Length: 461
Image 1 (cartoon, rainbow, N blue to C red):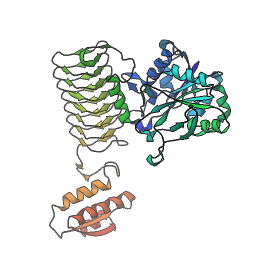
Image 2 (tube, one colour; image 1 turned 60 degrees about the vertical axis):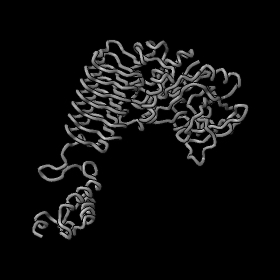
Image 3 (cartoon, rainbow, N blue to C red; image 1 turned 90 degrees about the vertical axis):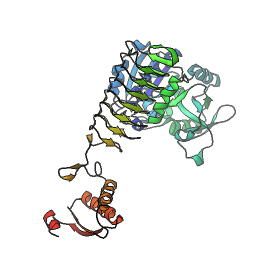
Image 4 (cartoon, rainbow, N blue to C red; image 1 turned 90 degrees about the horizontal axis):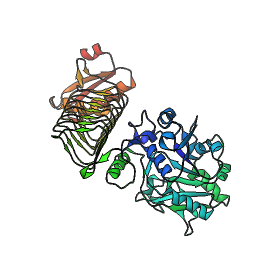
């Protein structure tokens, strides 16, 4: 049997980590997610694999090549425009002339695929859907089956008021070539919302089988961290490179740990990493290849990708750091911080909880960053410059910031003082001036509003 890996996802919910890498290439335990899927397929006897590509396809082609390094034969089908789950598989129809299995390239699982295929053969179904019981089904497509395993109905990403079952669609299917008759050519078509309901309406047998084993849709940043914790807790059977020492610490080839450093398992330390004296790697730390952990660093429940430099006394807690990051002495990243690829964080800078920094950004030394850095190029240390408060409207300077600055200033003025205000003709100027007026009024200061006026006129008044 052939297998189809759907690897066209952009992974928008995983940004900034997926800003310049396709989601299936995101590393889990220092291997791309899709590599774990390829190994699972080979383990169950699938050696002929067709991969459907869309976003940054060359990254996947370059890494996997013809599949010979992984013991399989791989072919590729690239979408020019998004075609949905079923449309992308139809795009590879020329390779699929007999029964085949479909699986996503961006999940982490060790599910028994052989059992699913055997069930499909036993029921003589047109389509068999792999199902999974989960505690929170709201994020997934729900499937309800009858006692004999036939599918009764589908519901895509319901609200809690619509939830009628805890069995969700895992995106793992065994299909007969006849399903292509129900997939329009060149149009976006989805399996669960379009194809399977059409099969049921046409009277074809569609079955669902609840699968045992681990399955995690690594679709969000929380799920990405959770997947690593589950790997370290041995909840999922995947291959981890290196050798396992005591306390569940995996060491890669050529990794060096100073005797004066402390490493508490479970943890993964990638190839050619160096952990220097005084550093502490606490439980659930994952280091990629060629990571340098400087003296007196503290890392806990964090994932650090390849080629990253952690300077002396850097502190990471519940953080994900992208490839080739550069964190200088004393930098601190709190819970939920995510740094994209090639970010620079200066000495003693602090990134507060939940901040996301997109790739190639600079956080200046000593900066305290409270909000995500997406479009602007740097997180500035100083708000006040030679020409007052300056920066990009709605990026560096938001209406909320204008209110706070105005209230801080207003508290230093006497009650009942009057401030003269004006603005230029820009929309941003109008919004920010009103925000400053609100802040001043809130502290008991009067405002004389000249609306649109020149600076010399405002000074004169």
